Image 1 (cartoon, rainbow, N blue to C red):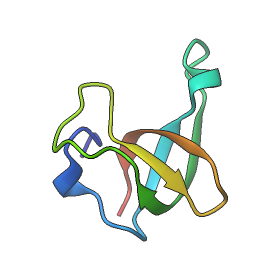
Image 2: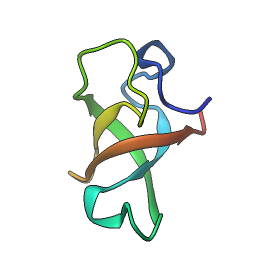
Image 3: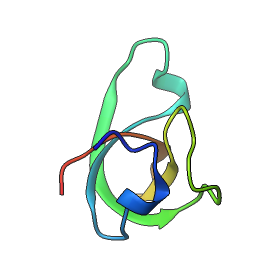
Image 4: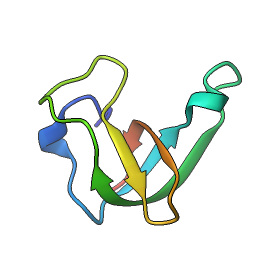
Length: 64
């Protein structure tokens, strides 16, 4: 799953996100979803989430 559909995400899911500051380098961060910030059901660049450690980014992939 690529993280562009909100229905694929659940609080507690293990995901990889890309933060705004890392968009050029492509560096991703892994963590547990604490909050889903995007209200729409689909976003072409990935659904925006807040991870348990406070990191905010767009989901690039969902592990489980």
